[in-house]
Length: 344
Image (cartoon, rainbow, N blue to C red; front, side):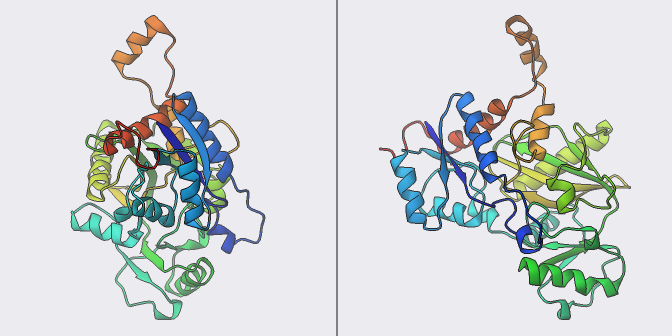
């Protein structure tokens, strides 16, 4: 079984580059290299595959490398390419990847799961009349990596809204999702698996001298991370149960990360689901992903722990175990008990 690890330049920072004049460190190669190394340590044959602008060149590389399954597909184009050619891959399908944050929120709300009230606007001069309560939060409808997010995205007064909307629509080049800003604790929930998905330790993001998780705050690792988050049993159960329901409602596959705000009344409000969630751990040069933090906080079960005392000292999940487990979920989903058509 050979795993091809996709990578492409600027995958995590391409949107922010449209808005920032400063040099932005691109960790795309470092991230993919860490994944490839972890997969090899987990016992897989793995190779880096650079995504080319011409998909035919990427296909030729996959065939020449005899790739059975692809890991680290990180854009709509890549997922569409893999599905069009019937190439197995790790992660959610185009049905979810192509769905905007607004459409995901509509699906979640339809199933009576909590999410802040919102609207979408494409032009700062055509902001509709609305009943949303200030403060509001404005973000790209298809953004990633906190691109375009600064403190001004928390809008306290109506006269501030057009300027922030224009930043998103003109500089990022996307419609703006405007939602009520829920006061509370920022929580993110990592999930791996399909039929019986498993929730990783819940992570809380505490802000360091800022009022929200801005691009610089997140990508420069300035957050104060609490993992596992300090929650009561009731809070943790409510968050996990809600996250699992959202994961299934949105038809996520293999892994994903659900961002929430735990409101002051204890309600976990859905913000978004990350299908290209950061998996990097605190080794190497890449930005530490939230699911990487969760993996490092994940202990084995009691049975595994006791058994391991006989064999070796118990440790937290390594990068190899974490990445390898996600790939195994995808292999099981595709029933890859023999080489894929590309390699036969």
